[in-house]
Image 1 (spheres, rainbow, N blue to C red):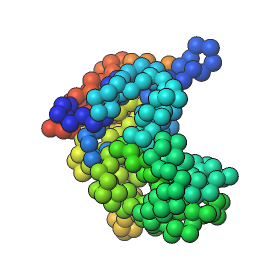
Image 2 (spheres, rainbow, N blue to C red):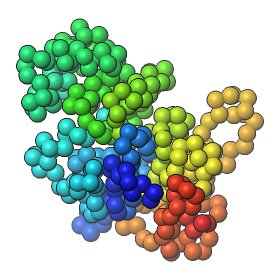
Image 3 (cartoon, one colour):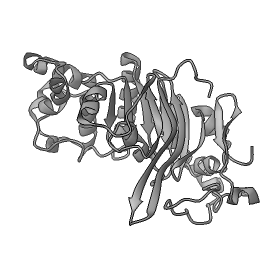
Image 4 (cartoon, rainbow, N blue to C red):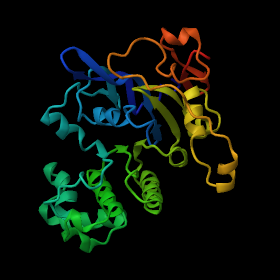
Amino acid sequence: MNLENNKFLEIRSLKKYFQVGNKDLLHAVDDIHLTIKENEIVGLVGESGCGKSTLGRTLVGLYDKTSGEVYYQGKLLPVSYTSGDFRKYSCEIQMIFQDPYSALNPRMTVREIVAEGPLIHSLWTRDQVSERVTFWLKRVGLPADHMSRYPHEFSGGQRQRIGIARALALEPKLIVCDEPISALDVSVQAQIINLLSELKETFGLTLLFIAHDLSMVRYVSDRMAVMYLGSLVELGPANEVYFRPLHPYTQSLIASNPEPDPRHERERSHKVLSGEIPSPINMKPGCRFVGRCPKAMEICKGTTPVWKEIKPGHFAGCHLY
């Protein structure tokens, strides 16, 4: 890829398989190649169950890597994290979780939740906790007097803001956002997106933004990556991928995105994909989209497409190119 001089996070042939039964392997993440530049937002989209969240959790060490390499600022991250590795990298890499209800400890106050990480890492003293928690709560749009409350006293949007404050309190450089807006109302989604964009500019954050909403990902991201059944099928500038998609799956995904104008939405034709999604267990060579692709060829059935640059900065894995 044309990012040799600015590889903030580099993923090489990353795989994450899960054992199913005695011999079967579920290919949740399969041969991912991705490079993220510093202070960049890369959006990751795809259907439910395609492996987006598994990729994010593998990057932060919550899942062990089956194979492949992940380099963070030129340093090779461990295959399996020890407690020492979590201490070392949690100040650099943080995660905002999808479910704002289960992501927060219900027995801890907001003050304890936000301050836990910095106290463990000795970034704050006990005397600084109130001042620093107040600062971060205000940065995410919450009043300081909320720090004495418990998670059950907040709405979903407020809980997600607390989760963002917890992640930012360690002042990381990379944040994996695992569908941080999917459980929120539309109006609250816009607030969280604008907040993340503002914080990215203010603190120079680098984000991997995982989501379902293609329009939202295009709005917030510099580049967009499309994932299908554990593999990336397309990657490029967000507007380029959205308006000029190369891969048939990306084209189908974008075509299914509803139009904001109800009249246009009623008038346009909808092409429903036929065929079944193949099982991710013991995947065989070939294009994973072949059974549903309207442009499938004979070569697609037994030969895995090569990931290559089709246009400057625009990559795809498809036999059409």
